[in-house]
Image 1 (cartoon, rainbow, N blue to C red):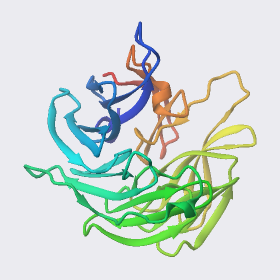
Image 2 (image 1 turned 180 degrees about the horizontal axis):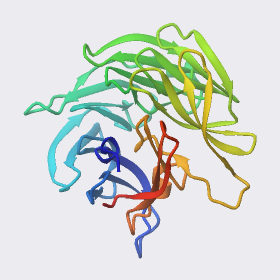
Image 3 (image 1 turned 90 degrees about the vertical axis):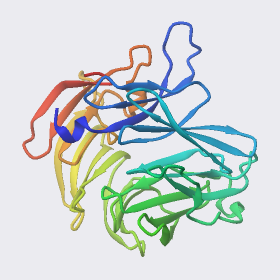
Length: 323
């Protein structure tokens, strides 16, 4: 297994399939290439995982308690109290970001918060102001997933509903909002570009101005993995009844097809898993989401590895959650 894949810490929501369970959803975290695996206690919402750490939240009256554990041992390292009902999180190195509503009614935004887990006593602090007047977003307003660039220098926070969305771009070093965009649905970001989807169109847009650089047709966009150098993305999409994995140039939008699979074929489709993939080594799992591929009773899923440069596909290369 490539070193860059072995080092990845992952987290997923999976269905508890243990005997006697009620089929509830639980958070599972692990470190690839090892047997390290942590199933978080019932009632804890998995927020983020990276660098051997997993972060979860217990939501209660007046906010949340954030729990930081070592994935390999399961040992609780520290806890944080935050006024946010934390529903989304992201680890960038040892800096934790989180967001969510400000009260149980979910009609008040709490903004984006952060804490430096490398300090002896991590203290929560606000990064962005809460977004006011949520009614302009329409019904079902919520915070979307936090997205980070491969370099770790840029973070994107999304809030929106059925009518509108707002994207805030945060500089991680200075913890300031660099720019904001409206009404985009982001899939992945670099430090200066955002890959978006609208209807049956996938587009690359400038992260500061929103200017569209190119667009391509896609019936459905599942996931994307960005090149750390900013030269391209690898995407998993549906197009004309097939699941395609393609490399797309950031500058021109030119496409190189990596793998094509027919949804109607006899063989099961393998899907790009961004949580486990690097740009050069693409990890494929048997379901569109990692959590769907994991059975908690066993805790493992078979994964294949595709080497982007050579075109070599190694099927059943390793087990997610196993050595």
